[in-house]
Amino acid sequence: MNSDDAGSPVEKPVSGTPRDYSEDLYSLYFELIDVDGTAERMLRNFLGPLHAQRVQRLAHGFEFFAPIQCVPDLVRLFTRENIAIYQVVRQAKVEGKWR
Image (cartoon, rainbow, N blue to C red):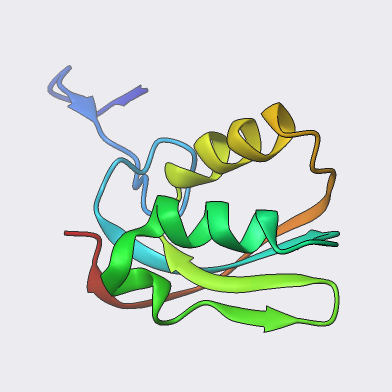
């Protein structure tokens, strides 16, 4: 954290960083193998009915909208079920809120 001339802390923007605890949504891509549909079911259950509607199944994974802070939770969820994640990509910020 930096300080200005008056000695008070100057906050750096956290939007789009690991310190982004907002409910802002980002387009995320998870590259993984989903042989039997387990990963898709887990993802949709995690996202809930509203956000699960926007899940797109792609050739090698899924694209969906969620806050950045959901990424570590989803990685843990998939790895607990022995589902390998080959890539996680945060794309653009999108309209809407998590709740």
